[in-house]
Length: 172
Image 1 (cartoon, rainbow, N blue to C red):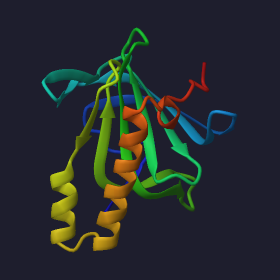
Image 2 (tube, rainbow, N blue to C red):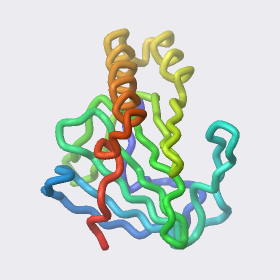
Image 3 (tube, rainbow, N blue to C red):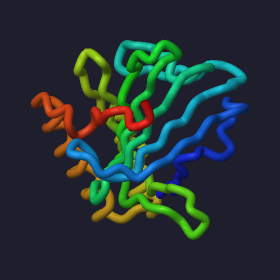
């Protein structure tokens, strides 16, 4: 299992990163919200989602991250330099919280869901999840938990349930 931090230390492409964090209690969302601003990057980042090649990181991009209280996932809403949504990237995780130094973290269970602005949803990295179990990095119960969590989210998303991933910008 990979423990990751919201402030993304050691992010190779990003030379300067703006970081804001707050605890939010609203009708639509309760948990930590983070705003990352990619102020200076060495080169753009791209990824393939289905048949689409997306620029997911460049100068001026903003990542709004959400860590819903009591939920086993974290959402990154990626906005381009004009504020248009590029994608929602949902990391299935075992847990998230803060460490003794106040850093927001999440234990990534490898499995991810990408939702595009057209509403299509894509499950990613099933192979990484399976390999982690085969190598003993995660247990069979953690593997099952990740699959069940992703399945539940995908069902809600495909039924039009945007409330599980499309949260407001609490930094506007």
